[in-house]
Length: 342
Ligand SMILES: NC(=O)c1ccc[n+]([C@@H]2O[C@H](COP(=O)([O-])OP(=O)(O)OC[C@H]3O[C@@H](n4cnc5c(N)ncnc54)[C@H](OP(=O)(O)O)[C@@H]3O)[C@@H](O)[C@H]2O)c1
Image (cartoon, rainbow, N blue to C red; front, side, top):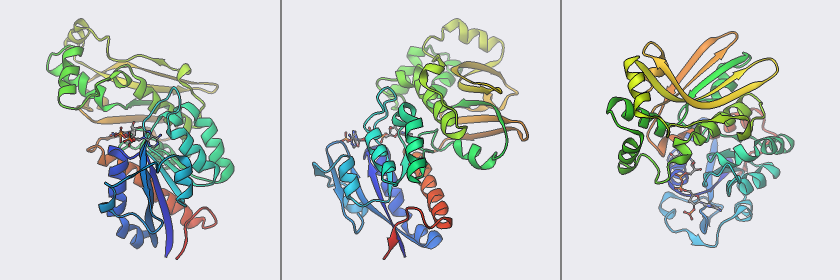
């Protein structure tokens, strides 16, 4: 049986959920792909665990101090890296070193954090191309909502003219509460924070940076664009005033924080900001914690996907969808990095 070794760098809520789902699906991988998937290493910022025979779920609570870093992951003999560390688009975050190291060595990388991909996307794409490694990022590019997959598979061959995405669940939830429960931004935010649905520091979401990051990933990895944060006008929902809400209610318009992208022959223009939709528009009905994307192409018209799922399971499942795409691709191209027979 083909042995495929997986390592996970970044072992918080999402990293752990991914490990548990991977282990729970081992029988499926054996049956569908004829592959013995082994979790050979996991690490957080200060501790980790490795075992070339494969870690079992019961051992994942006893991480050992000092076992961390790209060199630790390299030494584990993993064929595939799953990266789930903190995201920082201004520096690339700790994930950048792990991803660079994996791709340079020809190891496939499944990236869940956005930071490194936004900060150094072109470099990482080039690294993957030159080493023959696969770089997948569904978990980072809106997770349970299919985005890049739609572009790469469902709409293949079509010219993408426009994309609109409700890509951040927190702001969608806040806007719903502001409109329907008659709350101001601060009150809606306080309630969302009390119920654990908004971060203590929510600015990455509320000021539009998370939406902008996802839009950049969709553009750069789904459409081969080369956008940076400096190319985008980014506006969030923090300045929405009571009179804005009142006007939209009167006009029966529904506000959404939208990442949008328009492609012309010579340019790709992208922005993040509030757009309002009449009730007849499907995007007006994307409520609460849902996300959505509308892609307009030359030959297939408008395609809309709406999705959510419970976190962190949904993000783990998005990363493992990437894993299955890699297994499928490697099976038809067996000369690539696959595990080894045992
Ligand atoms: N939560 C979601 O639903 C969701 C959805 C989509 C994408 N994401 C992205 O997924 C990533 C992980 O999210 P999360 O909720 O799991 O975050 P989290 O609970 O804060 O976990 C982050 C993990 O990264 C580890 N880490 C920090 N620096 C590291 C380093 N230098 N080397 C190795 N590990 C390091 C932390 O280690 P310590 O525990 O030692 O500090 C922790 O285990 C984030 O980038 C997030 O944006 C999350």
